[in-house]
Image (cartoon, rainbow, N blue to C red; front, side):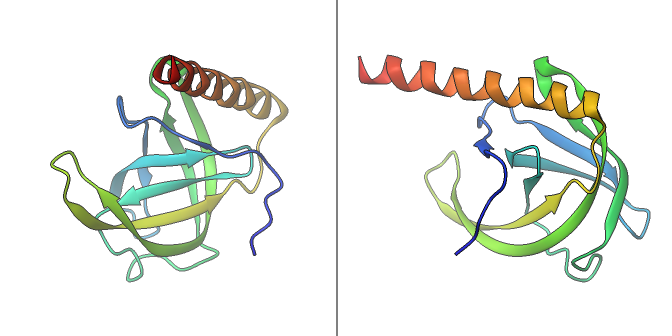
Length: 134
């Protein structure tokens, strides 16, 4: 059983929220953000990263592009990698790699701004769900 210290919100499929930066081996990456909290985030990629990164590795100055909510520059520490089944736009099931990261240190202003984004994403999800139910 996993215990979370922070509320985690799943991000919308469209527009995708992206995370960009440099891996430990200095190659550039861009992954899709699956979910986010004040504690960290989950990213999706088709690439197996076990040959490039190990749990505990830190990626510095990673840019989170949260679309209309702005950009955040953070450090992220890899917690782990796992396979995740996803249904694509054609209705086909494919296996993606889910990379789980934690934020080793957020400034007070980053934490406050990120919390506002998380609240807004949650508000939009509730609004969509209520429209669907009506």
